[in-house]
Length: 95
Image (cartoon, rainbow, N blue to C red; front, side, top):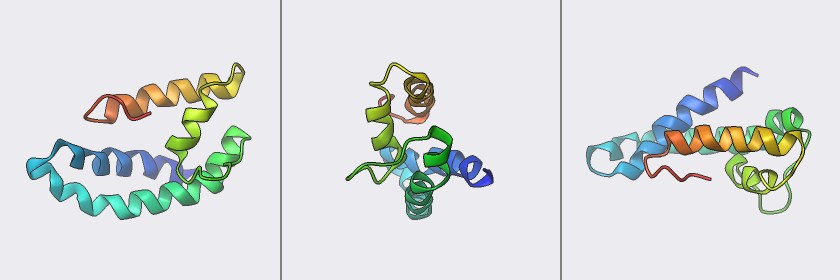
């Protein structure tokens, strides 16, 4: 569970590279964030959502796009998490 709490700050730092300019120095956070995202997508996040990734869903963000279409509790959680990730993304549209 601690790894999930580590993923959000890593993502927040890594995604700032999209701002360009001096923000590009945050690119050093991208490889560990991606590695942790892929590992957690197939382990802890799969157990927490009771939904395992399908073919091609390497990152949790990709899986959230599919889960948001559901009308059950998984969809509600996915929509909530998408709002958080969209708020962190400099473009405002991560999912």
